[in-house]
Image (tube, rainbow, N blue to C red; front, side):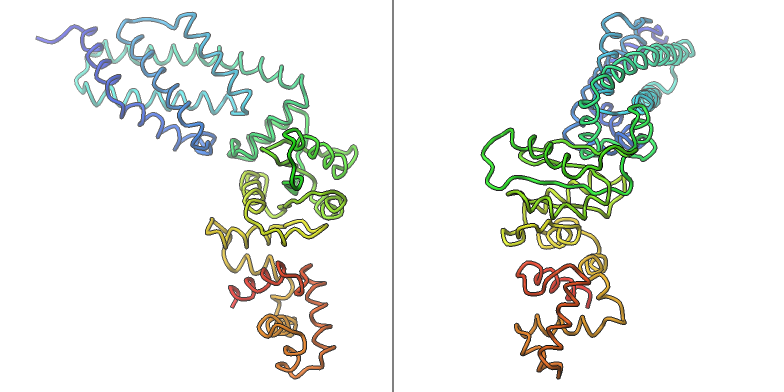
Amino acid sequence: MTNKPSEDRERVRQEMVADPRVVEAIVAAVHEQVPVYAALDDSRLPEVRAIAAWGLERLLHLWATDGRLGPADLRRFRGIASARAADGRPVQAVLRAYRVAGTVLTDEVAARAPRLAAADAFALARMLLATLDTLSEEMATAYAATSEDLAGDRSRALRLLFDDLIAGRHASVGALSDRSARLGIQLPDPYCLLAAEQVAADRPDLAHETATALLDALAPPGGEVTSLATVRGSRAVLLLPLAASERAGEVMGEGSWRGCVITGEGLDRIALAHRLAADALDTAPAHAHRSGQVLTDADAQVLALLAGRPAAAPGHIARLVLGPLAEAARRHLLDALTAYIDSGSANAAARALHLHPQSLRYRLRRVHELTGRDPRDPWQRLTLDIARTIRD
């Protein structure tokens, strides 16, 4: 004799709610199949896990009791949608995550009740379809309303957008383009990302002043492109047109600031650009911050290499630092640099290469002109030394 359908449903419900592997399977599937969720950092996953656990329990309860979503459920779904609008996660991705979760739920039910009665199977399918239809409408409405509120406070909306970009919460250029279009802006592409801080700052609000001052000094007036600024701890972080990188050193030299500017990453890798810049400021020695000297991609990659953090391939780092010196036609300049670094003086290097000292010094000046790095400067000599070593 078989159990009544409701008894089968309740047994499966209890088993699944008590098994923590079901929630983990849902979170893993969403993380794998929905790109926006794959880009979330570890701090966001507990929230995803908590929503999955609550959603699993509610859906199984509705199935076991032939119930429907109530006002409290709808309020919670609307709250989730509003939170996702605030943190920039597209509503399409959120709804897709629920569909993926529904598929996992169905598979888990089938694994526990392979001979489920037809009435129970149909009830599960009907409940999932009805629930997804209702929450799609409720969440889309709440998401749109919150998005409109955020767009009304334009400065806050732009700051939230940039916060999401540097946190890696936009996994595709398409999603970023959609959000930018809703805000009526065009992001700089190509861009430079500048992270900057006041030296020996002891005021917690100074980072905001730094961001405002740098944005005023470096952002081009008017135009179609929108520059963005936000704050991370004691640092100002700016997203600017690429041309601003040429003036960053000049502007930074006017105040007691130090910074790092990254220019070699795409719009889909703004989070990586920020991490490179932040790590560079964390690890660079004091003598790397000469007056008017802003750290660059090359400095950041060398520092990542020295700190044992993920860095570019050695060949790419060498090209970043050496630039035109890597070309065969300028081998004589690279040889002069190598002799100077190995011997420690221009005179000794000239003797090793059978050159007049003035000829050797001229070649070192050319190295400086072509790479932007002065072999006489301790930090820049180190980066040049590392680059020529890993190149060989």
